[in-house]
Image (cartoon, rainbow, N blue to C red; front, side, top):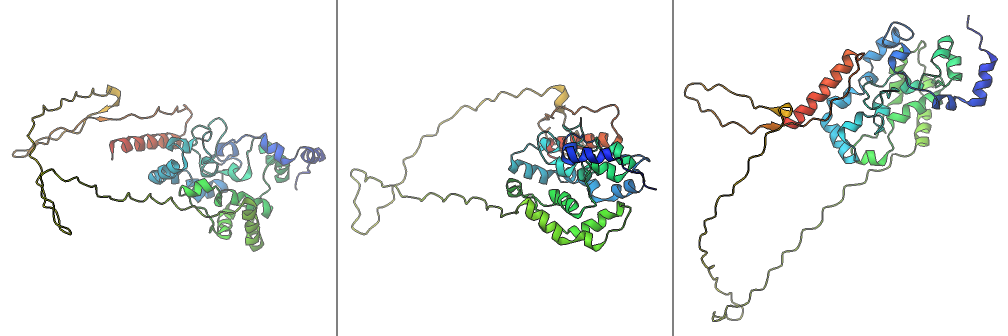
Length: 330
């Protein structure tokens, strides 16, 4: 039997509104919802989430670092700031900006990306769906609310971001997406809940994609104008319509310049110096000259808490290796 909902909660919701409750909420992250454990949503929901594309939303950026750097550079954003929830909006759609971990986002799109920040509604939601909604949880059972939640990330209208090369998502299939997402619900999706008109209305409310402005045309090449040459005194003047004979250039005395002396550059500090690999010379082989030492300057290493998970540690190691390989050209 469903638990009765206290009348006082409905009064509080009517006075404050769910928008106010959500604005005061904090993002807890997937462990806060029990997705990574066996409690709360740790069973069927965790199994679905681990295989869904939303779970790979942040890995998509790590696996396409060159493309990410290109878009970020055109957008005017440093590559490292892409994963910083305080300096960019990238992680608002590609990850989950957990409270207290905003500077280095490492969690993919998870529960609160769609249901809203959970600190205010977590405990009431344990007692019932309606109690959670009254405390600020997004009512995704409502098709209008659900379509606006999907369109927020799957339909990009930022003209600057589009001009930088980010896809717009204008042709995203919301019906197919809903059927995939509904696998973690306790009820089957039905066709009226994938009504394309609702998503079209949500897209219209968000604004038009517009046309990406073409790149500026290169400036025209300067015209080549032949310079007039004054006749040399005593030289024969060609007849009208003729061509003056070519005058050979005066010989130039060779000069012997002292070779330029270049001061050798100081080797980098030991902590940043990576010696070139050595190869043993086989009989009759020619050993190439040693290459110049490679100077590698990496950004400060991010702080890692003692409670960090194996996945968080692997993401840090992966990012540091990509930064190292990017500097040594591998």
